Image (cartoon, rainbow, N blue to C red; front, side, top):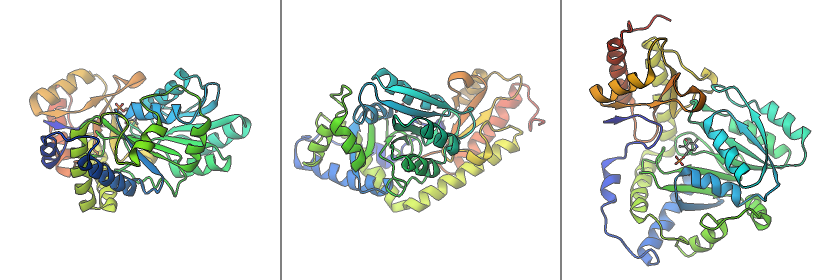
Length: 365
Ligand SMILES: *Cc1c(COP(=O)(O)O)cnc(C)c1O
C-alpha cells in the first residue's frame, strides 16, 4: 500500500525492525541511555535548549498536556482557528475550564497576524495564545514566525500545535520564542503512533508553577523530574522508543536542512501534479502546506467512491476532508518517509480512478 495520509505515515524498514527488540527494564540503564539519546536529537530538530519531554500518548494527549500544565480554570485564552485541529485545541482548553476567545479564519486560508494583534490589544486579560502551526485538515501552514512576534509584543504565552510540521517544516522553537510546542511520532518522524514530544520554555515553567488545571498522567513536573534521571514517570512504550532512536538517526544522517528542503520540493511537486490532472487546490497557494495537500473534489465525484477505487484498485490510500469540508476535499499526505516517486504513484492512480468515475482527465477547469 502507498499510504499517503497525513499520519500515520509509512515507516522505513529499519524503524519497523527496531521494534522487534526484546523489552528492557524501563528503570534501568539501557532505557535511560536511549531516552537521553532521543531527547538530545529531538532538541536539535526543535532547535531548542528548552526542556524536551517525551510522552507515551498520541498528539492530542500532548495538546492536552500543553493546556493543563500552563493554565488555570477561568484563564482567558485566544484560540487562533483555521480548521478542525485548531477547533480541537480550543475545545481542550474549554473542557478544562479556560475562557476561550475564538479568532476564526476562513478554512483554506492562514491566520492574519494583524487580527491577532487587534484581538490581544483589545483584551489585556488574555493569558495565552493557542495556535496550530500546520493545519492538517485544510493543508495550510500559518506564518508562525510573525504570529509569535505579535504574541510576544504582548508578552503572552504561546502554545503551538506543531504536530504535522516540526521535523518536516522549519520551526526554530527558541528563535521564535514558542513556549510549548508539541508533535506526535506518526507524522513527520517516521515512527508508528504512540509517542508525543513537547518543548517547554522557561516562561511555560513559570506558568506551570501557578497553573491549577487538573492533571495527573500528563503532569510536566513529574515528566521533567523523571526525565532528569533518564526515566519517564509511567511505563513508556519502549518499542516505540526503539523505533524513534533509529528514525532520528536516519533523520540526522539526511540532515535537518535537507529534510526541510525535501518536504518543500515534494509538496510543490504534489501541487503541480494535481494541477496537471486539472484538479484545483483547496488552500490558498501563499500558505499551502509542505506536509499535506488538500485538493477539491471535482464536481459530480463522490469522494468516498474515489478513495475506495484508489485503494482497492491501485493501493493508494488518501484521506477525505474533516469537519465541514469532509466531502468536498481529499488530502494527500507527504511528510516523513516520502519522495517524488510516491507522488507519481498517487498521480497515476488518480488519473485512472477519475477516468473510471467518468471524468475526462485532465479535467477542464
Ligand atoms: C494529527 C494531528 C493532531 C492529532 O494528533 P493525534 O496523534 O491523532 O492525537 C492534532 N493536530 C494536528 C495539526 C495534527 O496533524
